[in-house]
Length: 312
Ligand code: DGJ
Image (cartoon, rainbow, N blue to C red; front, side):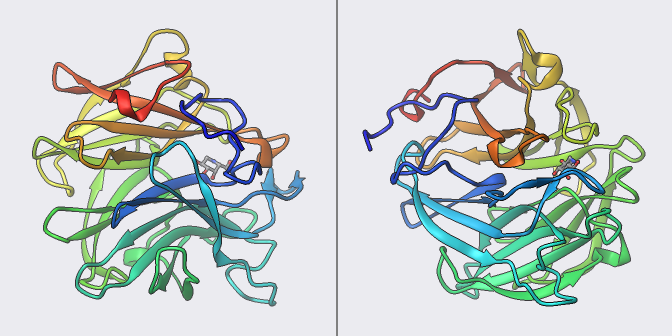
């Protein structure tokens, strides 16, 4: 493969072996000089009932030094074809996120685990000793006894971790503080954007403040992104509106947020990561990655055909 030197959102993105990257609804962990991209491995047929979905295959892991060229490290967490298991093929596994716990030395993965009708609405957790896994699945919970669908995990500078998820029938975002080992909820939580039906949350910290980018809810179809700022991960959150500008700002450039990545060694440089879903053929969903900038204290996203992380 010819090494890639630019990011071109919406195009087919192949790994270093030339295979199409399968890392949807994903997130990136930077660990000891390497970026690890985790996501939904959706390389199977799209089933149309009860909703458009792909059988659970697992969570992929890719590694990269430059955010451009990605080596497939295998499935970090594999589906389990056993009756009653959370990760059996007929379930839903979405939006996996991996964080590193400095105290325990473990990698912790949280993901949205659901039944095909999205009635199960739980968070599943898995742990591993190395970034590419294999991750051991510990089980799933309804955090704070509440529903959990689209989700992310955020680790603050002080090592505190937060699970951020669409709850209460997707009406409200909940932000739960995780236990010291990041594998459990603590009962400490806050509600945000009540009855506003936000999903696809991505959280990051900039200049001592916390920012969230999320989407509205329209199934696999794109809608306008939204953003907010808070003095703590728990809030109180102040809405900042749609961070997108220019053509297709109304559909987040035909994509839906999944993660905001701080670029290593470049304070103030972020990559907005999003999915351009193809519900007819979910395995062919594409990636939209754009530089995230700040203008007048607000995150700002503009379309750019081709760019390199070096330019950030
Ligand atoms: C939108 C969510 O953000 C996705 O993760 C997925 O759950 C789809 N809805 C399913 O329609």
